[in-house]
Image (cartoon, rainbow, N blue to C red; front, side, top):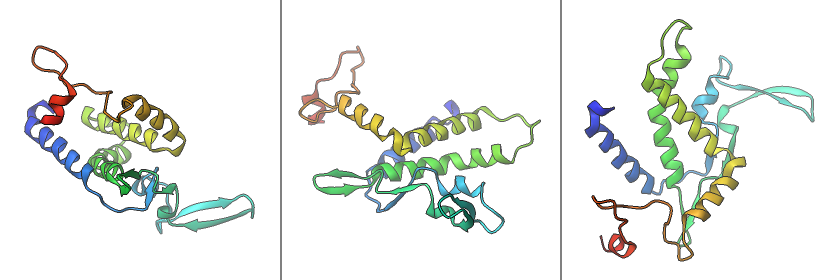
Length: 171
């Protein structure tokens, strides 16, 4: 990635830009639909076993592994979907590597960038699981001071002195 610093910087800026947009999406999948398609039948449906009724039926991957508004935040009494937008954008970066790995042969060496993308994809999956939302909420609580100022990440000047919040706010 060092050979493409400009592209990396552009990607980070775009990620921040996309993350701040308020795209509406109600169904937030914690297992992406594209991922589920690898487990689907020839007609792109998943086999489902209903334990209570003891029957097997087929259904679209779009109707599984989601929770409505899972990654929605209320900021100033308005719903914001920037986290879901960020997940979607990131997944779209991972898919080419994922496809290469899934379709590769056992003898083919998987490139390091594809391995890294797979690792990032799996990390995103972990944090998207509803069961881990409790951990995320605790981390968010730790990251902010009582006055809702972010106190988890710090910005330093070139002599490694921590920049004061009032200066950051001014910028």
